[in-house]
Image 1: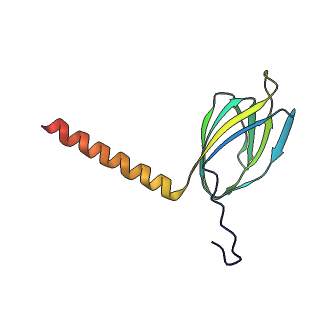
Image 2: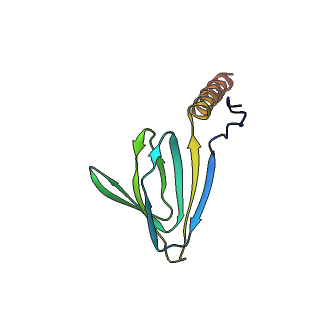
Length: 112
């Protein structure tokens, strides 16, 4: 609980997003790594290196600690839809440790 008695809301770990606007933009600060799948529509990401377009079916990793300027556009289905998964430090470390342990067990089993 916070000092004011309010319960702290956890950050959403999985975000399912859909919109029917023709196009819309935003510039969020990304504080954690995010794995994003564009289901329908497309996204243009703007940076100092230029603009990169990502069509439906793109799976990408957005690195943390950066400002991301994005323009999302609807596709043939007249919607933009994406699925985003937050890879926060705790979840990322737990996943990495699990993978290392699984690999070690496989190596040990294969030696027998």
